[in-house]
Image (cartoon, rainbow, N blue to C red; front, side):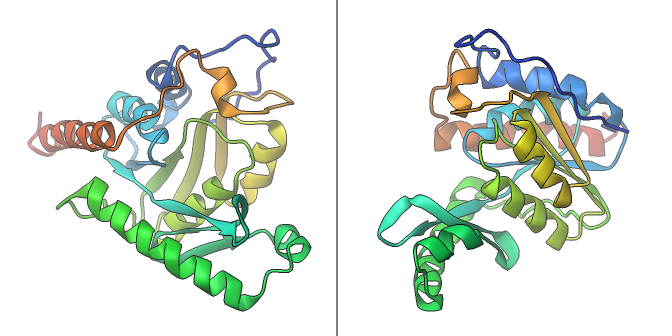
Length: 234
């Protein structure tokens, strides 16, 4: 059984993780209870991939991406009214939709645009590889942190829709409010740090340089090597 860890806040303004690799190593240590289990590590690209890579490496588990796109309010795209994920999963924020007077036609137009981008991103990042099957397995959804949780919620629901028997949401940092709310979508929520106030995920990293598509593609390729070795008995 993997337990969520709630640790004290660090000093104000002090970063906790050196970078996403460091965060991934520390998160992997919290997930050691999954060693030997039939788990698949699902990263939210791009920033979640370096974190998830370290988790997958420690557990010798398959690594895949799970693509989620934010649905932005038409006249204020940075304001999310929901999110969509693979396999047609959609999560909507009712309060934002009501306050912005969003219509069904608005949702359909935004969703159509974002679905096309979601499919393009999946092809670009996976290349010729097929998605890793999740039926009957433990899906471990990993990101570099959670502020509000809408994308994480969509990712967890997408993993469930793909047939995962159990969904674990694992992140280096998330506020208790978000982690608590997401327990309805994940069977377990694992955090290394759970500060009461989380203004931005990046403040918890000394190096929060943007992850590139090339880095994501390379990490997925490298993760495939140990999965092949394991299947060959190595």
